[in-house]
Image (cartoon, rainbow, N blue to C red; front, top):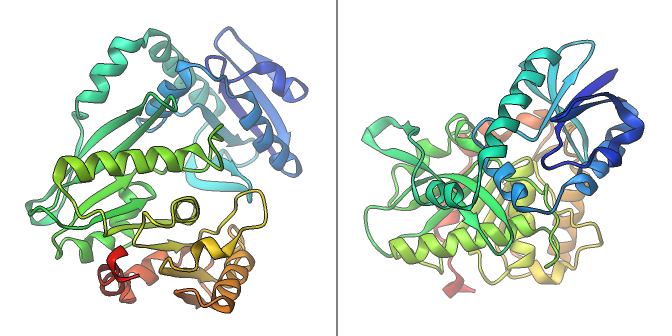
Amino acid sequence: MKYRWVYSKLVSDAETFRKYICEETDTGFVVEFEEKDAAEIYDRQFRSVIDSQARGYCKRLADRGFPQVFGVCVESGMIHSVSPDGLECTGQKSSLKKIKNQSKKYHKIMSTLNEETDRKLAETPCTQSVKKSGGSQFKRYDFISKEYNYALSYHFRPAKSEGAPLVIFNCWMRGFKKNGLWKKLKKRDCSILVLDGVKTDFFGKNGIYESVDVIKQLADSLCEKYNADKNRIYFTGVSGGGRIAWISAYKYPEYYACIVPAMGSLTIGEEPDYERLKNVPIWIAQAEDDKIASPLLNDEAYDALKKIGGNVKYTRYEKGGHGISPKFFKNENWDEWMFSQSLENR
């Protein structure tokens, strides 16, 4: 199977992809590769990111529908993303022509951004908001971290009262609705932060992945603004969002009261020191037949944490593939378990 990706020259270095480039314009370039080369393309994406202000703008615009990287399968026309685990299909169809037109539109917007527009957009909610049943509403915002030059789009609904916990979910609003979290969480008084699919797609000079540092900065700012209980910050996520939950707890074990990663694993590029997570309550959800995120890493983590007396639960389904999250979040009592956790109880 052959794949074609469209990259923007504003944030990607064409020379890093030179051996794969099949077409090049003033604003971007197209790379073509076989499925067996997906891992190398993933690695080159990391190395091609231009470390400039455009990097932060890119992340913000990506979450608003202008992604830096567009990938399509030549044979099927299906859009794919590439991750350390391989190619993942988004379930959407497109054409290379449409993708290239979107990339040109993206490039035009990117080239007009400057620090002033960056500041205004960071301080103003999006005009788009997501309505929910029961009269509640999530508003969409941008969090700009100048320290990391990183832009993070998110949806947020504050709690009704001060001193309530903060629940973080990572895997888009549609995942938040589809997987059944909102049905359970709307019955509780808590602030809810839904991250727009933050992945481990940016390495940082300050250790592991800087995206988890930016998430912590955002959580700190929300806790301060809405007087949330910093002893009860809960992190859950699906797929790449589950991986971010793992890494966040690994890097900041004294910050998160518990994590609930579904179909995501602890991958940090080296052998984890599970002693760091010994006191972090963790509830893992995984399927044995998951072909996208192998259960082996979660099996290893569970066994290692159990061996050292860690506070860990594991819901492991025999079947369900990379789609067990609705079953887990709708049927298990993860919410009761989660809200019983607090840093004060450790």
